[in-house]
Length: 407
Image (cartoon, rainbow, N blue to C red):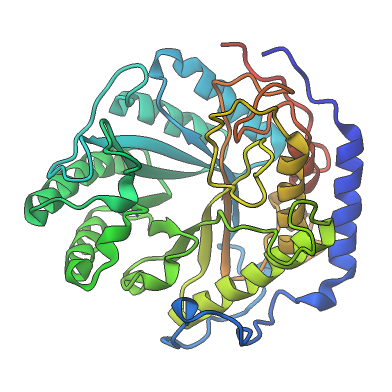
């Protein structure tokens, strides 16, 4: 990967966007959470469950900080050095946290057991995971470890959200055993956040609630750090065990063109207003749960449909990459959340309070160590693309462009 980041014009545009967001704080202050709009559909109804969180500004509580990080999917362990390089690049860009996503495998949705598979293109060894976690700690980064179930031979369009074993008891036993293996590594490497599950939508049914509570209690007995669960943007209100966790974890792949007059050509203001609407709902829901919300994934592939279907990274028709769409998604998020999530450089300056205590922060999906970045890359990675300048401009005014490693 030899392409350098040279999109300074995009960076200048970002600074103007952020300036406008700050100047227009009246649209939404960090400590004001209005009622949900009447048009919220019934499947997004948020029952009141808890008293509001203490809205003491963060600069009066130096022990709390928001996370602004990126995910690294740890699969190709034959080139572990690329992942170490990625941590260096992320730190240089201004991120204060990293999310290590690592696979757990089962055959298909009917499988009654999960397990680890080591090797190139499969999963890392625990030593590989420990190596990255310790490197991140040396860089001063907050660490999150997130095991994630993948199917080795899925049937049709199956994915982890559709798992449905015939007998659940052996599945839960197997899953708990695997979680214990990851907890061992998390404990040994002083991990800050552990994700007890990721997008296991069929387990949100009432018959699984006690299983989740038992697993979380088990993790709590062993692990001194913070615990969360990561669910999808359209199901977070269906999870019934947030009260046992430290934060409401949500992967944020909303369609952000829904307020646009022309959804194929949304304006920057229309995209920002959509993210502001989403933010209101998330923070209001977090308040009902008495827990802050953590965006465990937010990202946009460099593809034409990125703003409508950011979860879809499959380019079967081999269309040309669209880096402008990716950059617009990042710009809209930053503009909408700039008064709620405060980057470390901003927070440490002492000139402003930290962000809203109802928000734990965000992990962007993803930092891609393996793909080349630059004009021909249609994936989620931001290296060598205009989106990087948006992030770097927000995270740290002195952040420097990085050159992706060469595979």
